[in-house]
Length: 132
Image (cartoon, rainbow, N blue to C red; front, side, top):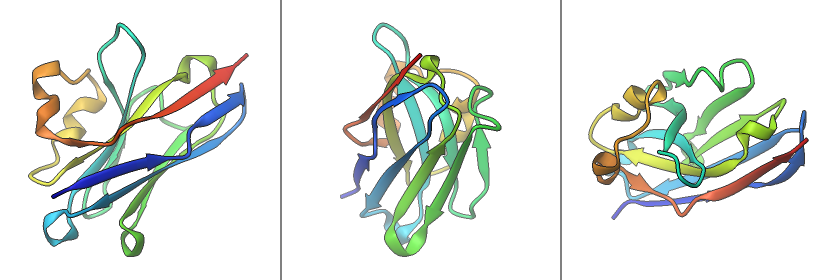
């Protein structure tokens, strides 16, 4: 069974930084495409960044130049380093694992339709709050 656990959220002032961690266990062969999404109440879940098993990465436009996604295979962990945070980055951040394909890459430019959320394994979420 695939298990996804996020950590590292918190409250910061605008311009500050945070690093989120996502530990993924149980992926077949240890290979999975891992992505970060975020969601605010009343809106669809939107992509932030994704990394595949070969360390190729992609970012949403809102994250480019400020966020960096990376992975440590020895620790089964993916990180999201977020710099120069803005109040509009405030959201619940979710980590998702796709053990079948690189489908999260598709959702960096458009929200994930609710019926397709079940395609991925999700963590419980970690709150990020950025104050002005």
